[in-house]
Image (tube, rainbow, N blue to C red; front, side, top):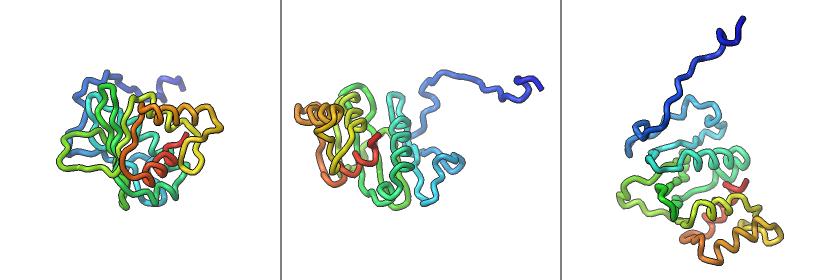
Length: 173
């Protein structure tokens, strides 16, 4: 049988912003096998802004959940990542019934317990750094680079220190 007979035809379209969801819509992840975990808590991707990076962050959270399921199960709180570049802020809500990751829309009184702000590369350094006690390791070059970003004011962490340490551990690559 020729390969073309068994392969599925997929139409490729560039992203034009029209595929982004409304603020009050969320993606249905029930049919996504990678996101149906035995603990019953799902990682859901909510609103995606035209200049948003929440799908990438959702992937990092899902990876962290699969590597550290107990930490993901116990993590509670709301987090917002704010970028110096023209990206929409990313909100993450860790609740007992699941984890929601989305690009920030209207504020509507939403007050995160933790805010991490800085440039995208500097925030990514935090996820790439190995940790010790919830903080980047001084004995590793990536850890020193992440700590230098924080000490130099390139990355600011405001709010719950406990939530910050747990989030960094969850996102640690």
